[in-house]
Image (cartoon, rainbow, N blue to C red; front, side, top):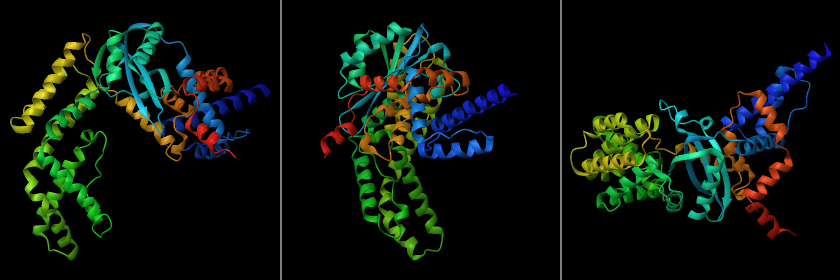
Length: 414
């Protein structure tokens, strides 16, 4: 009976750890909130054990992250690398390298974190092509043959791929933004339209009709986010059209007056909206199914409605991208998106959102931890027992170095 009670207690303890890690790694719940949730779960399950503090949960996440990075990788001849670097506070840049085998990609849905194998997560002040090439060479020895690399169009990553004689596949989202930039960057109508939007935000932000102001425009990567500008324009035109039919209040008269400038841009907005609709449909097809002869035919059906003007130019540029990528890789379908990397950076930055002065720290281990398959209780136990605090500190010293917070404490110490 004593042994049965011990086994039952042990089962509930590992189940509690599993539940807390699931909540932390799959939601935006803070570490302190996780510690409070553990008390509730322990009471519900009637576990006679002390609930972990938030620092303990944090350590669990770091241990899982280190375990994912250092455990032996499967050797094969069909590996694909996904690379990206993120800029945080200060000069430090976190280079993240993930891998996935071509034969294990499910082309009926977008990638998930658990599909990926974390290979490297390293912070440096500057990433040269030679540095990235060295890492790729090390990774080759661990996993086998790399058939291609998917990333944005960063010159250092492209150069590293050339040094290693590995095919580089430009990320679809970034390339679409590049196409839209070519079409609209020098366009007078687009420039004036966005200028009017910015002035309207400034003029109305503190008025009683502030609820109609247009969305904020991004300074960096603005052409990856212009869909919202066309959507707002269509909504504004609909408001004006409906306002003519309804009885006008004082507030609606103010709104009509503030939106009246948009009428001359009606044709431009509708054209931009049509282009963005086609663009979004293509993104959905290719991010789910990859690039192949079949998916290209599906995309060309969507592009067939782009027959003149900027729409025709968009169609031609997209088809050029298809031809370029299809000529680079022999294995089909081709994975052409690194959105999953961008998503992991976004989740990591959300962890830091309450204290940006932390910069890049060993909390970056949460990114490889996202890829851990939390359904396996035995592997959770193995990871937490195998990786000790010393191993986490050694990994941090080697791959992160002196953090922004450490430097701040040193310079401000009294």
